[in-house]
Length: 134
Image 1 (cartoon, helix red, strand yellow):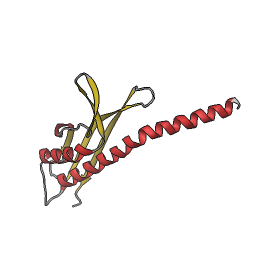
Image 2 (cartoon, one colour):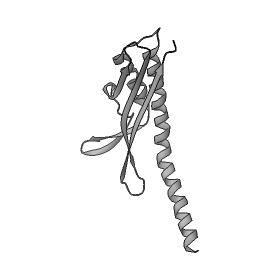
Image 3 (spheres, helix red, strand yellow):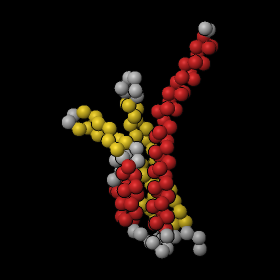
Image 4 (tube, helix red, strand yellow):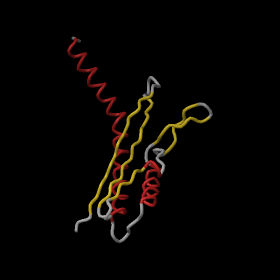
């Protein structure tokens, strides 16, 4: 085995490992985007016309079962279900006329790397906006 083959093999295995660790995070972020899209639809819907706190609660409720996050319990980190997003973490921006709105969530995901038990933190900034056509 020469150096080029070894380098290519290490790069391929490293890329596959990183994809194996990151793809679940990306799929969970797609669920966050879907929840924000539903929330901004409620925010700008002329028939429903929900206010900001109701939309924040709805989005946080939809995200309660998405993914996992780490909490410290009894001095040790424990992985628990949900992203740990509270209604206050959902930021609502609405135009004065109520015809457009934006929802934004900033959150972090921490992943334990399997063989080394090291932790890797990834920050996400997810936003959705909608406009009602006149």
